[in-house]
Image (tube, rainbow, N blue to C red; front, side, top):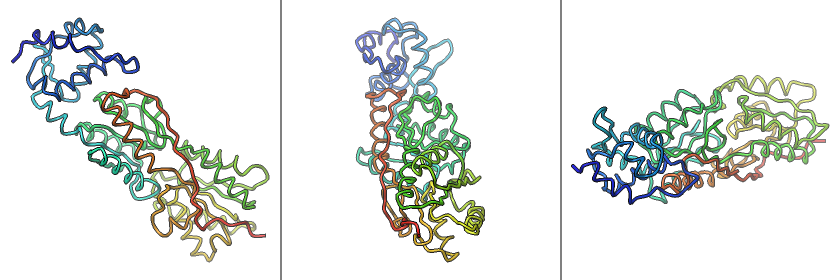
Length: 381
């Protein structure tokens, strides 16, 4: 086994990247990982002391300690009190195990634009010869936390996450991944305080686009329905009001379930629809914040004998890939989920290879469009 002091020459010759945007501890961690992957550092081999590494590389000892601590948490090095720091015997296997595996964490996998996001994420990963693991949290914070722990154990190459909303994803969920050197991209919405790239959905713009369409079709009595009240739901509502403008009667309904599955509160939705359409002047247009909720409303209204869009117009929100007969029929404001999946992989690849730092605030707003469908018509005279 080489003497750690004999390593001084190789470390001295290998300066860290002159990248001011990447913290020095991340640069050192990435450098040591590259040394292990290339076989220049082998299992069981001792590293120079923290003091010596700091001296060789011209960085603070605390920076060295932070990099080694992250590598220890990832199972790449072992630190033995009184003896020093050693490359773990299974370091290369552990790195290899996760280096071609990207993870996608979703609040659901069967409704909304999420199935299409999953397909595009898998396609983009496959194009770069990577595999994908998908975790469904059902918008539950505990399930999301357990998924993150499992992904850390797998040493995945990167994670794209649509964060939970109720309660909102805590910062430490993201911090745990970063401490293991795992890149993270947030999709749809941010995690407060997290320094990660965000592929954002412009919720207010979507609401405004829906409100404008409804106003242009002459509707005067309108309802907005959302399965639960969140930051994004409030942004939809704000934009919707702007799009409607003045002089239009608006009622707003927020469900109580945190589950993204609209059918989990079918009875409450049905009761609200019954109340709305028993009024003397019922609404002539409904805007919903999920296609799955729009589908549920469509079915209930048909059962009551109402015709869509002749009696009531309906606008949903979903992806650009309109899969299924009912989804394809809906008029919806669409989010480019195909682009979101591709750009998530692109960003994860850049962070994994050091072209972007793990801690970056890059923001990309996803384009919004309209799927015309057949559920929006001019208001009846």
